[in-house]
Image 1: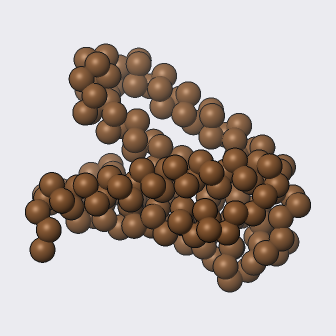
Image 2 (image 1 turned 180 degrees about the horizontal axis):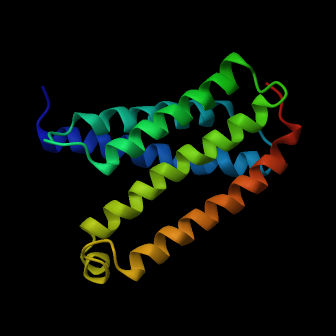
Length: 160
């Protein structure tokens, strides 16, 4: 159907659009704003990123498959909280936390891919077990914990 390079490009576009729109969504949550179009774009492209990640030819289960499965579960919670429960009661916090977590998983994989594909980063951590890789992933995790906390606080004014 698609060549591998075309399929990879589609997957990467979904991922980058998901990350970009996810950042917009999280900043909106921090500011107490519900951004309906950005939410839909983020959730849709992030689901598409996780789903298309399973279409690459491999002969065994990879860590990326596990991250993708966890991301799809988190996204299911976000979609249910946002659209079926309309952010009512505790579903608002469930949406915010799951949306931030889904964005984190995409960024986690972005860091992994950057260390695999950017020569300068790969030279610093060729096996991804070196300190620069761990520091980068820790920095991303701390950033998302802070953003998640701020988003939960900022989202208290949200309604469906």
